[in-house]
Structure formats: structure tokens, C-alpha cells
Length: 136
Image 1 (tube, rainbow, N blue to C red):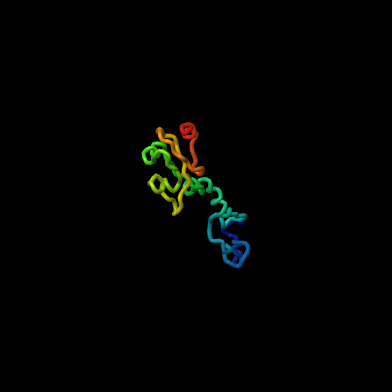
Image 2: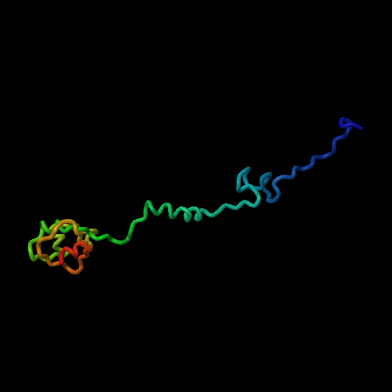
């Protein structure tokens, strides 16, 4: 017997595809891709966001702490007389500092320049070490 002498089988055998569900040949999973495969598992999107936080921080991270306004000794030398009291309000009145958000900011005095006048400083003012040495 040769292959051309074989008789055809009666009836058609059903194609076995899809396995599971009643959704046709792809079982409702679409055609190809990661989600069509068995055992597919996609990581949560929040994990990607968490991974990138340290990269994004440099772009939108802003310090909550308000930095003090800076005033140099040479500005005090020009704007104040001998024996005057240096306070936040007096600095604001002489336009040496500006209000931030409607409030008077903290003030730090830096040691650029010389101070020949005797001034009275408010205790709330911050001072650098150079200023403390020059005042004494």
C-alpha cells in the first residue's frame, strides 16, 4: 500500500487551540505579547514611581526652612550712625532687607567690610564668627 492509496478519514477533527474559556482560539487574551503568555505577571506601576523618586527629587525638591536675609557690615557702616540700634525693623525701614511672604525674615550679619561705629545689635540677629570678632 502506498500513500496515494490511503482512504481519507471520515469527519473533521476539531483544532485544539486556546485552552480554557469560551472565547475562541485565543481565549480572550488577544494575540501575542506578555499578557497573552502563560504565567504572565506585570509589576505594579507604583514600583516604577518609587524607583524614580530619588531622581525626581533634584528637580522639584525645595527646602522648607526659610533662609535668613544677609546683611554685610559695610552696609551697616553706610546706613547707621554711631550709637544706633540695629534691629529687624530698622533694617527693613532702611531697605537693607525685604519681607518674605508678608513677614520679616530672620537676619544674619556677615563680616564683609569694616565697622568703625559703635552700634547696638538686637539679640535676635544672627552673626558670623568674623562679625563677633570685629565687634569686640
